Every structure is written in structure tokens, then in C-alpha cells.
Image (cartoon, rainbow, N blue to C red):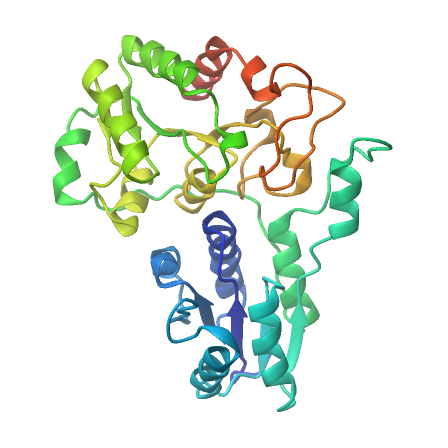
Length: 343
């Protein structure tokens, strides 16, 4: 490609999806060093992109200055100053379509993600379900750049590179002999969350083994739960509310393994190069949202003809009296983590 190629990349939410974009852009930048990337997303997600060469982060403020069609036109005017040669719409929502339309009127090349909505509907419907692995979301992202004329081959490998720990976390990692486990037990949708009393059993068992446990992700309510666990179980630390996203990513990069729901915790660990043991309920890795470079063999899930019934986890399980995620025994999770750490 010509040295003047400038691509505006649009992906505003959700947190896990944006983290997956960062994994793709890291490899895209390595393979296309002459291309410049302008990443447009919410300001909170900027740390995902801090270490990607030739990338400029441009924030969108959809609730204030970029609200409504007038706000989006203002964002378009801001982005126009970069003089982009192409737009990669990795979101395909009303906002990204509006911005793309403004650029299309000036003759700028636009390519948009194919989300595979029909095949995802077939995967999740209750009757005549078509149960097969769909194209991975990261490959759907990469397809957009391929359609723009770029070469990109994803490795689907995680690359662990421990970052310097924040000063206030150094003491937590002072014992170099103990294995470090991150746990991200919460999710945006309640149906993706493993029962907290069972998660507590997992934490109790891991604590008894002597592993160092770090709890990530959530707001004030989740912080209170994590604080309670940290008080009850030795070598267990609550990180919620104590570190910013940049610091959390640095801490995660020093872990040996992450335990996560089908949530942003899994994708942050992928970005940090850390293997993930993941727990799945009404969603399924076949939908294409398994963490970048993670293994399906590390997914803990129950086989049931009604699974999956949701792509995003915003619908309750249809597996009968008991939710499928509740059929997973804490011992199964503990044994899988031990297997990862000793393998």
C-alpha cells in the first residue's frame, strides 16, 4: 500500500469488542507499517491502543459533544482533518453508519463489517438450530481491512510480555514462587455470570492451595463483593476501584492465568497475552467471541441442545429448570485452572 494510507477505524463499544479490535490492530500495524490508523472509540478504552505503532486515538463523546446527528457531524469534521483515505467501520450501528455516510459523500472509500446476523440467528434459535462454529469476530474485523486492499494474516496467538507493575501493586507480586490467578467474575449481563456462591467456592479452593488471587472488573456493588472475598480468603486481593484500566492491563500481563466469564475480562487477558479459563452459559464460543488466541478446550460449558440461545448473553437460559451455567461444578473449574498452571 502507499505510504499515505490513513484508515479511520470505528468501534465505539462494548468493552470486550473494542479490546478485540486492539488485538487485530496490533497485528495489522506490524504487517502494514506504512499505514496510519485513527482509532475512534470511547475515551475509557484508550489504554487498549496505547502500545500500537502508527495509531492515533480519537475519542467519541456520544452523550455530550457528539450527541445526535449534529454531534456526529461535528465528529466527522474533526476526523476529516486527518485526511483519511479509507474508513473501516467495525461497528455497523447508527452512529458509525452516519459518520461513514458523511465520508462517502466526499468520495472516501468505506468498508463495513459483516456481522453474520442470519447465521447467528440460526445458531441461537430454539428450533432447527444450525449448530456450527461461525467466523471469529476478529477475522470479521480483519476482513474489513482485506476488503480495503490490505494484507493481514492473524496469528491467533497470545504473546505474553509482562509490563512494569504499578507501584501500589508491586507488594502483591513480591512472592515470585506463587502462581498468580486473575478472576473476572462479573459481566454486563447477569445471565453470563456464574453464581456468586459457587464462585466463592472456587476462590476458597484456590486460596487453600496457596495461589495468589486477584479479582477484577465491576462497579461499587461488585467491589463490595470482592472486598468481602478478600477479607475471608487468604492471598485474595480486590483490585476493583483501586486501579485504572492502564494499571489493570499491566497487572493482568503479570498473571499466570485468568478465570473469566464470556466478558471483557477474557478479552483484556488476551490483549495482555495471558491464557484464559472461561465459563459459558447461554452464549457459546461458536458465535465467534472467544478471546483472541484462546483455546476452545479452556472453555467450561455444558452441552445442551438449547445452547446457545443468546449471542450477547442478554437473554435467559432455555435449558430447563436450572440454568446451564449453574450445572457447572466449582470443582470442574478449579481442576481446569490447576491443569493450566501445571501443564
